Amino acid sequence: MSNDGFLSFPQSFLWGVSTSAYQIEGAVDEDGRGLSIWDTFCRQPGKVRNGENGDVAADHYHRWQEDVHIMAELGLKAYRFSIAWPRILPSGYGAVNPKGLDFYGRLVDALLAKGIEPFPTLYHWDLPQALQDRGGWPNRDTAYYFAEYAQVIAEALGDRVTYWITHNEPFVAAVLGYFTGEHAPGVQDPVAAFQAGHHLLLSHGLAAQALRETARLRPHVGIALNLSPVYPASESEADRQAAVRFDGVLNRMFLDPLFRRQYPQDLLNLLGGLFPQPEPGDLDRIGAPLDFLGVNYYSRIVVRHDPEFPLIQAVQVQPEGAEYSQMWEIYPQGMYDLLTRIWADYRPAYVLVTENGIPVADAPDLDGRVRDERRIRYLRDHLVQVHRAMSDGVPLRGYFVWSLLDNFEWAHGYAMRFGLVYVDYATQQRIVKDSGRWYAQVVAENGVRVGE
Ligand code: IFM
Image (cartoon, rainbow, N blue to C red; front, side, top):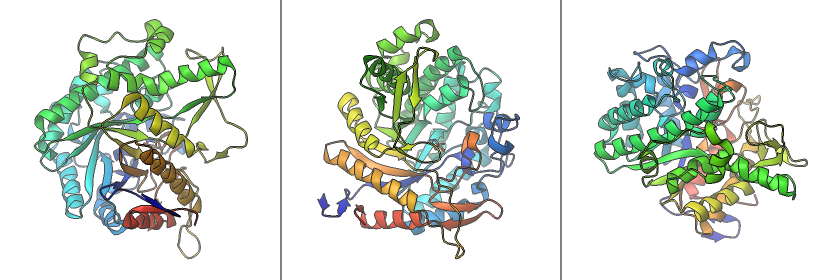
């Protein structure tokens, strides 16, 4: 697979980019879209940097044709986007909004016409506000409403879409949404957070079943988890145990039920009564075989024991001497460690890296070009580790850069730019960054030049 200085990938490798609805679409009150929890959250003072919101974002709802055109120019093979549940079912269930379905139908058709494989994600955090008003994810009913929504989508798009992702990062939806309150709906209640986590997983199982029963093309169904290898800050037994606990909450709380039909016993012991009791049959639904696992990797986690820290008595530390981006440590080796560990412990049928990327304070130079060398280096270094994991037997079939466009980075607002394509928010002009051109070359050559 490799010559000196060039790492080649398999012919069918899916080179893609990822986005999500609330982060790029805008048009929040057009064509019958209902309110989402992020519309509400952004309007609460102090929740999002500078009081920003996704009302306009990258205006993708109006500029989607231009965005598909850019993807085609870059030669991309796959596009992972999310469907806004409140565009399809403005109240979360019941009446379907045909204009919402039409929007995604047109997008899928345009992608297929350009030979780009669509990868819709059904849920990327924009719960219909009407369902939050009924309790949100801590309410078990939400899981069943999600399955109804999945069925509506499968009926509409299941004749054209092969690859489906049920959820994006249920850990973030549950823990930041209902425990720390940093994300919508801004609840701070550990019991609600673990209920939310379980119901998100249950809803995954129910939706996967609905997709399999309804879609006309034989679907490949997966879920995208935010996973990180967790390392102890020192050799001490206390730090080692802290790392095991952190790993339990971040990684195994989702991987174990999905691949082993059980929650990790050490986590149940730790959380005791805070953890919900699954109902009979829940774990079988959650653990029904996945076609693929989506892995979102950005950074590693290093932790030390801290008896003061609630529940897990472990806190993340920032190792000295490491390299950092605006949000996280840059640690490419973690990609290899994570992928090989997942393969060793869980044996997924195949794996897609569904997100990987870096925020950089990009700006166009005088000549209008965006020279984002740092992003190129980040992506290249991570692809080297992806390739290494493949060479060591991990069945990887694709890699998606987060993100196609600069976009609304949740509580950070527009301060973080993750795109391969720069967005001038004042004019909505798109400029393909140097990293976008570099990635196009990777796709065209089906491999990565190293040591350049
Ligand atoms: O922007 C997010 C995305 O919505 C989910 N995964 C991480 C990205 C960068 O923080």
